[in-house]
Image (cartoon, rainbow, N blue to C red; front, side, top):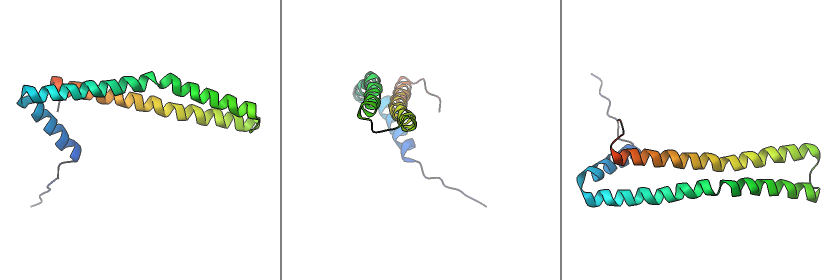
Length: 113
């Protein structure tokens, strides 16, 4: 006879606790809605700052060109590196949006387990 016991992951226990809180009382539901609203603000901030990040990469590349620190081949490498550095902010914003959608679906009960 084989028996495997799997300990719950921390994420699963947090999700279960959030579902219990959401279903238990209106006070807890209000706290969760406030938390989601605050998280929505941080998500909005992540998207608002995206143009700033791309502009910073553009200005850094212009500074490298003006200062004469790099040759043409290095310019292309720096351009590529700065582009992908800015793209990390895009990925973070999209991840934040996905998490926000997940929390909204969890609180609204439209989530399938």
